[in-house]
Image (cartoon, rainbow, N blue to C red; front, top):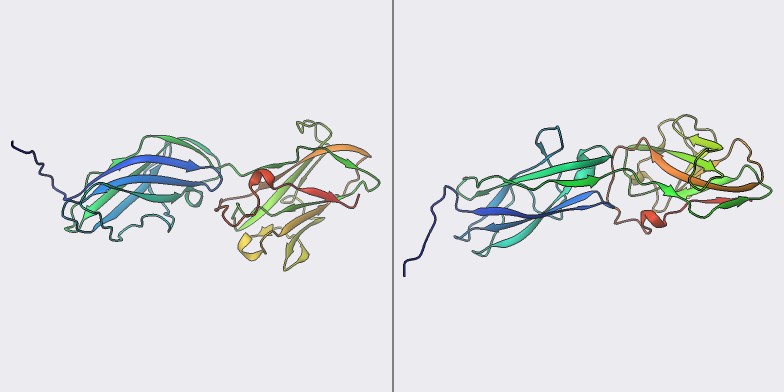
Length: 260
């Protein structure tokens, strides 16, 4: 019986199998299958993303996946590989609908396979918000210190924080909204185990802080005795980094009050 064969310009074939987004790390994993019948090396020569209304732009690839222009060896049959796009490095921290990625591979003779474009997917890179679910009862000290862990899942050059305090659990009608980017009075960050005043640039990049470093704000306006809810929100944040070094998940990373 006769057998079929196919003649193509490239000696390789590639396809995108799946695209998945990790909301905690801001990383997009693209699984691709590759085939080189001659068992010769091939290379990833293009990895790009497309935002709605934008243009194709090069991806910043994580070193744990496929890299551009690095030899890849397949076993002479289809084999799946992963490339990982660190989306938090390339785009603003917000929510996106209808994102696509595109890849292209090249055989060892320098001939490109057809570009492979993924189906559209959504990704939410919004900065995390630390909300304290349980109410805090302030006692005799009506100007407490609010202390929270600097979120290592966020990696800006500098970051500021906002604290919202309300007697309503939905934080409606707040009694105080404190923004460190507006006024640094009472704000401190921890470095080498010591609290230092926060200046106008904000809390330094997490690479300059110890793991688990804290940020502290001492209320400048007194509260009346009572029960309050509060929320801590990072602001002025431009990038979101991996959460692998963080002991707690964002949901577990709570703030707390002292001196009451």
